[in-house]
Image 1: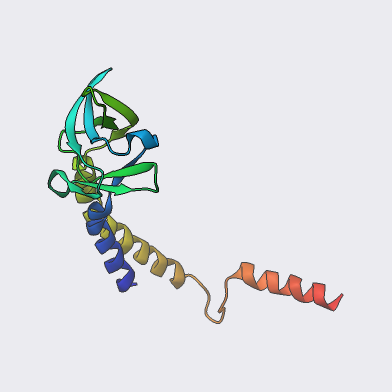
Image 2: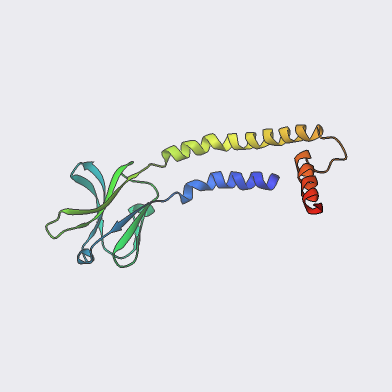
Length: 165
């Protein structure tokens, strides 16, 4: 039981490090050599962000990971959006410096996840302790000599009756 508690506590503490939000960006082969764009939408037709080349790498201080997915798409994985939460675009930069939007998605900030972690951290052990105490209280009321719960004994009787018929 104690091992389970430690595993759950470690999972709650470590969940923040693996929360990558992903956006897949499919493109036409004619756009393969163009600069790629990652930006936060500032109005219906405009966004601000950064450009990068087509080789897979880490960007924005490690908060973005770009990986090539096959021959006609790439994926942007976001750990923490540096420009805050909102609608983000991935795209390519055309020859006349306009953005060709490939996909968009809402990217959340991790500040709410951090807040939830600090709420769950003390609650999880309390729930575990109360569950353990309740289970002990229930087991005190089980008559001695019965090794299995009543419903399991009934099923075995029914099963034996079916075999004997």
